[in-house]
Length: 488
Ligand SMILES: [Zn+2]
Ligand SMILES: [Zn+2]
Ligand SMILES: [Zn+2]
Ligand SMILES: [Zn+2]
Image 1 (cartoon, rainbow, N blue to C red):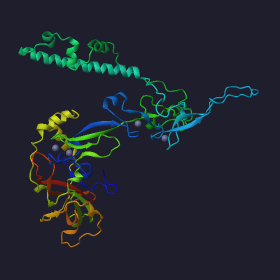
Image 2 (image 1 turned 180 degrees about the vertical axis):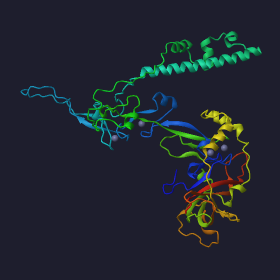
Image 3 (image 1 turned 180 degrees about the horizontal axis):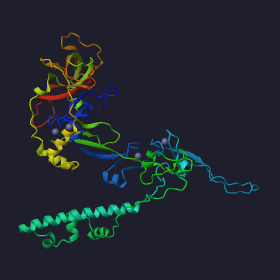
Image 4 (image 1 turned 120 degrees about the vertical axis):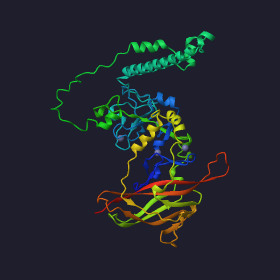
């Protein structure tokens, strides 16, 4: 979700230090913290084809190489191909013109199907793929010329993985043996080796693995590639006959150089994913399983929980001068919100020691990317760009009250202009603030003008934990306002 009309002039500081627009952030109701794509775990819930909406378990998706078996993309422009039907006149056998009893009853025209692109007019007939008698499926599959080698490599890596697993198990066994408490399953119970391997979750046959290791021939790096054709520099190039780079790379197995070798691309599957807070393991988003549904079972977006700050307008920022800034604040929650603007340095210090305990666990569970928590957090900090700040927005001392969201009030035209020196207008759960930007005299003209502003806001948590009562909290967030560039 993003605004189409406005680039991200206002960025929120995530609890990990990243700067993101509110539309890219999540809000964990359990940690009461803003989370971004970096501080959540992404999990694949289901695979589906975005065209035919067929749903499949991940094992089947892997088997089909994450591609749909009945939908295709155009190899020329990548638009989805449509199946078209034509009537094919069956070939007439040679007949003698003299005989009158011409038998034409089983010479009915037959429906035949081909694939066509409505965008660029490419059809499967262009490349000589024969029409099919059935509408779905049955399209000739091209075999990968390197299939044998790829399978060899796969077997080899599988064998290595198994060997490593075996060695690890061996090590563990030794550790136990030293303690003198370990009795092998096979000794005690008469289990066969195969059964024991089964229990340990190892593949059935060790022999197959070791043979894959033994028979493997490593690839050889060659000094020179294939010779170029003789006429490569003399033959005139016809751009209509050769493929573009994206067209070639869309089918990495064949990489057709000639347009005549293009083939329909089986459509890639999409995934539905749910997202989890790294710190507490709770779901932040969970989509409905049905691929046709765009709804979520859980959807904890910051946009629904954190007050939204938008810039209405601002005067050009000049070094050493004050300029006007109009901000709009919106309370997206269903409860009244108390708001207080602050300077970031006045925020109460929050200690970060609460995270490490469970973060390791959830990290391991997700991608196994970073096991060391401290390095993960420092990575996030390093990624977060330090904004150069040359402007300050002095915060008004008074607290502001924002009423709860009222969907019916969205249709009201009138805003209350009964205002004072700070509030410009009020309308339902929104208000406009008249603020001032103070720019440092040292700010160099042409440099980006940015200001930070912190918000303290009240938040009523209605997530039903052990306590049935909704809990009121005081939360903080910091935004960075992009005010263009410092003028000369
Ligand atoms: Zn984050
Ligand atoms: Zn499909
Ligand atoms: Zn096309
Ligand atoms: Zn959390």
